[in-house]
Structures are given as C-alpha cells and as structure tokens.
Image 1 (cartoon, rainbow, N blue to C red):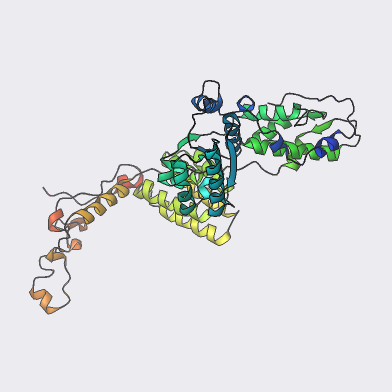
Image 2 (cartoon, one colour; image 1 turned 120 degrees about the vertical axis):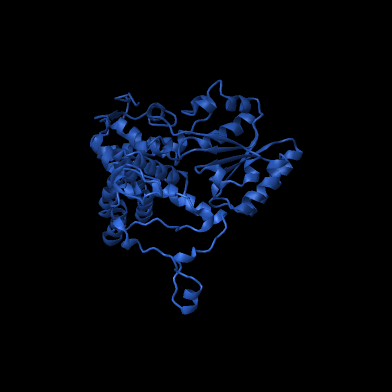
Length: 447
C-alpha cells in the first residue's frame, strides 16, 4: 500500500515539468526492476531460495517459457536473466517479427558462439508465432545456438508446438497481490531517480487503494494509472508550490475502468465459462451471475453465452424443469432482438433460472449411452411389427403384423418390443425424483 501521504520539496515550482522532461520513457519503463532484489512478486521464482533464481545465478538455466497474465514481469525477468548471465540479449515481438528477423538473429548468435559468447533470444507473445515460425527456431534451440525465453499470456500447451515445448521448461507467473502492487506504487512515488520522489504528491480519500484495486494485479497498469493521475493532478494545481493532490475525483476522471484480464480466444475465456457452467450446475445463483458479468465485461460475445446457457438447460437441468430450455431459447431471442447492453438482463434472468432450477443429468447420461450403443453395436433392423406397411407387398411380408396400438390399452401403455433384437432390455433413461422429473411415469416393466 502507498502509505506516504506527503512528499516534501525544497522548490516545488516546476519540478513536475523538469522531472518529466528528463526522459521520454513512460514511468512503467523507468521503474522496471534492474535485478532480482528490485523485483516485486513471483517469490517462487525470484526469492533467495527459489530454484529458478539459483539456476540463473549458476548460469545453468536452459530454454524456458514464461507464462502469466500481462504486467507481472515476464519481459523484466528475461532481461534480468540476460544481465546476470552476461549473455547477449536479442528481443523480438511475435506480433511484428517474421522468419527473416529470426534468421538474422540466429546468424548473429552463431557468430557470437564462435567467439565463446552466448545469446538469449527473447520472444514476446510467442503464442502469436505460427507453426512455421516456431519450427524455424527449433533447431537452434535444440543445438544451443540460442537460449530461448518465450513470454506468453496464453496456455503454452495450446499455443506452442509440442516439439518446441518439449525442449523448454514452463514457469508460471501469477498476478500480483494488492500488497505487491502497493509496493510497486510506493517505490515509484518515493524513487527520486526514476520515479516521482521529487514531487510533493499527497493521496487523499484512499485514492492509492483505488489505483491498486483498478490495476487488477497488473504492475504495468498500476504505474500507467499512477502516471496519468499525477499528470491530471498537476494540471489541476493552481499554485506550483502546492502539493499534487490525488483524490478519488482525480482517479475517477483519469481512469475510466479497471484493467481487464480477459481474452475471448484464450485460456481465460475457457476458465470463466467453466466457472459459470459449474456455478449453475452447483445451484449458486450469486456466483453464476458474477461469472456471467465478468465475461460480458471482458467483451464476450453474448450469443456465445446464450448458446452455453442452452447447453446448461439440456445437460444439467433436463426434465427436472422442462421450462429451462424454453427460457434459454427466449433469452437468446431477446439478446438477438434488443442487442446489448439491454440483452444482458435476459441472459442474467436465464442464468438465475438455471441456477435455481432442480437439476438432472438423466437425459444427458441416457443420450451418451444411446450414442455409444449406436456406434458400437450392430445396427439391427427395425422389429417387423413396428414397420409401416404402405404397400400390399409389405403387408404380405408381415410388416406391422402384431403391432399393439397403445391407445387401445389402459393408460395408453402396452408392453411390446420396441428396441432392435440386439438391444432388448436396455434402459437408458432413468429419471430422478427431482422437480418435474420425479412426476414422470415410465411404462410398467413386465411381470
């Protein structure tokens, strides 16, 4: 937490302009940690007893993939590794680099290797490299021409070629805690060389906590927010000798919304829809609404969510509440009809209905067993008494002979063979006693 309420200065006038004018680099770039001791968070990697740090210090770290959300130190960690190991550091972004760029770096690395020098190739957003680009670096990683450090926000098991992944070790970086974000901001506010230590900044109304909360565990976002709010506070200051006051109004006007950790095509997408579906299945309406809101806030396609709600109705509720499916379809139609953001309420209503409904997966289980039998058993012909006989020849062959018309019997239920010969006696659907399903009556079993 940023706990310094006032920064004293001998000459406050013009300090903001002179400090900002000293460098064009953003605050987040200026405050980038220069060594392990300056690194906040990821203690499982950079702590004094961490295996990762020990491997780096001993210069025994091989090729690695750093996987974690934005703003947690992946690039910084790669730069520290290069510094500690005294290796040449070549950095490329998978967004803009091509095979030609990789070939140029590889040639430089080979020349250095002949001189006894090592090269670390850092590939930012490595998940954006296509298969051909990843294949291009595989041989030089394998023969040690370069030590690869790849950074990705996506699950590498999905986005990195298995051949390349097998030659690297994956290290997971976590979002920073609020306390760690607070420490990042505290250092930026007090650092006289790279931060705002020469400025008389005063936080009011817990505005520092608001920045921490809005950062969502992203150190880079927190520093960008701090820089923006300080700039806004400076623009509002009338007397240059006054403190730079950062209050809640300054934060609100500077930062429109929190940093969103969501990727509609990545692991976060699958994690959140899994949480939503399982919360509905577990009948936790509050959690269900929360995960729905998180996905919509992240920009998820509302029609995708509508489709998933239909799936919930059929997989987890079924005939325990036959209204679930019509409600889900109605929500889809409502979203299609009125659009967003108004359609969000229709999705919320449907999700709440699903979460509070009695649950049954009896149809889901039965259908799985039916599909399994269709695929794995021989496709016997339809029993002859169930066949239609629209022609005289068919009647002569016995089609329909012996069929018992259910409505001619008490309760419109009659025992006869309906399944093919090879599946006689199979029972797929076993209704539960929950909700409407508990009222369903199946045909009586033969004595």
